Amino acid sequence: MHVDYRRLVDGLNITADMAADPEQGLPAVSQLVDTLAVATQAAGATFTAYDANGGRVVAATGAMEWALGQPIAPEHVVPEIPRVWSGRVEVLPASLAEPLLSRGLLRMLGARVGPAAEPIGAMHVYYAQRWGEISQDLVGAVILVANCMNRLYHERKDLVLDRSPVEDDRDLFLAAAGHELRTPVTVIKGYAGTLADRWEALDDHERRGAAQVLTQRADELARLVDRLLAAAGGRSAQQWLTRSVPFDLLEALHHAVADLPVSPRESVKLELPPTLPPAYGDPAALSMIVAELVGNALRHAEPPVDFDAGSDERSVFFRVGDRGPGIDPRHAERAFERFWQGNRAVENGGVGLGLYLVRRIIERQNGWVSLRPRDGGGTVAEVRLPRADVPHRSMAAGEA
Image 1 (cartoon, helix red, strand yellow):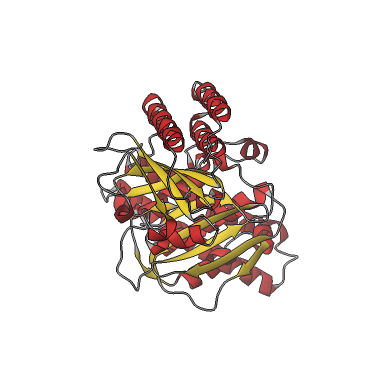
Image 2: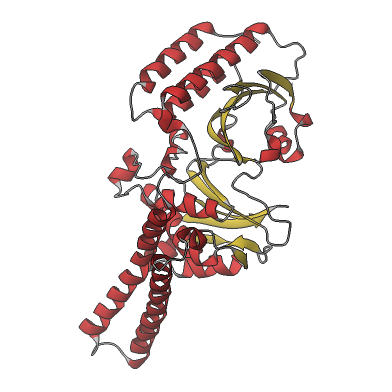
């Protein structure tokens, strides 16, 4: 396979310029992946960052854009990673091979990023051809870009994707609790104001309905306050954040959508299956997660918001999709950074905390969440949780 050295050098120069900008960390990673794909004429390319729990695809291009945000299970990370390797896709475990083969990707070439003892991750290029001998030019180009990625990660410490919390658990708990408290407080304030201003105009049925909503939301508010006080009184905030039990995801999703304010709720096009396997996680967190994902979709696109769910052999999942301009693949991971705001977030009033909290809370429940471009245009957010009816293990490093 021919290597376009002019494209390779141009791309590396662009990456060097981007890496000097403190705002261009993860975009510089994406630029390296783009450079590798274009210079080697690959159908797609990825960079997977490794940690103690496995890994995550943090940059992808071309035919591999669908993999953005996908976790890689620990068992799929080879303990002693070779400098470079190649082979046919079908020799991979089925959970990795099937989505590649279904997209016509038949061959892959990979290179380790970082030292053998402590690799940072791996670069991969994918092709639709089943060729025999791999040219030394192609191997050299992949190793060169992998070495550039290694240097970028060492120079930019902010790129190290460690799932351990930057701030302590109590800080995260307080941020999450504050985020959750906003909904019942807003609803209580709205209904109380309606009763105070329009008491005489409302009939008895409407008054009773408003009173029931106030009671329901006051109970919800009391539960949240109890959880906050429990943490402040010595109960570990980490215990609250990692509280997981078997639960009916289908029922929880129906409740979460019903809890949305009227306008977002009416914008949701709900297509849930009649049954789902039980999930393992925290059902109390679903309302906040669904509200954030639906609200995020509506900030970036006109209604409707597509909402569906399903399951596979290890997980249950739900997806929230819009048909707006679509997320820039370079921003698919940055969107989960604390207080990060893209141009669209600024224009639409985002504060850069909601998606950060969603990911942190979902991963504390051994699940994972990702954003990626949607086939046909738009963006899809996907949340996966472990199935409660199969042996449980961390989905935060689940299958790709």
